[in-house]
Image (cartoon, rainbow, N blue to C red):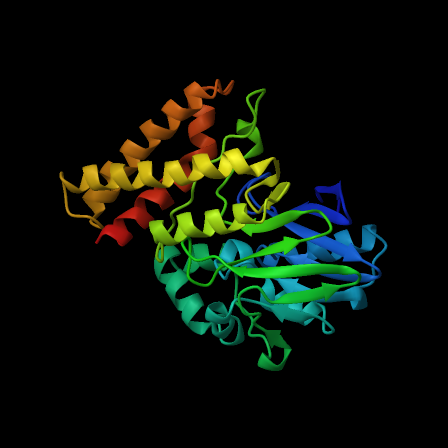
Length: 317
């Protein structure tokens, strides 16, 4: 398997590209300590062979995997859970209590996503979601900890992007695995001014006040770094977090402005807000001195801009 893209980050953490949609779109993390392994995020069914190959290349046996930990059950983070659990029969699934039932019985999750994407696209991208035996599932409460080898993982309830979202603080690296709570920072947009971080307000459970509170909660731990699913390590996160909170307010304001023109949640509204948000983000990228062409910038952010427009529309309506 020569298309595997893995990176040793230090602290016993390996970053693996999940090959979701395009390179550098989504990452999962293999964390190892004293012979025990946790896999944080699973990507989709297509990521599972990459994870198993990554373990092999790291000299780890499948029996060493103790925990599989999706930060939330959106399918770019957890679509591969059932297949990976089947492939690693000794592992325990660690998932938010509000997402656990969708991993034990994924039929509603699959039906909802099929309605959004269409059957052909769903099958191509995600395939049949496999259920997980509930005896192999645990759901840590807010601030609960788990031991992985000698290191401690702390689980924080972080709603805002989704109600079934937690973030994981790793004392060994002094960093958080943030899922989508701490925004997106695609590596193509990083330059001498640093990363270009922006919020994700995807449907259907976006809650701006909850998201801002969750970001503040992460910053209260004074982490030294964030491990973003989208994408990679973000150092010195505190000033980025403050800016992220401001950006949430900016997106809400733009969504309310668009609502003066047409009905929130309507197709017309999403089209209008998508245009407004794209102009907004391209303006921010210009201030960031992004070296990519405008067309290249749009190619990197267009999926998330549209999802943000849809999420803001659902929230407002």
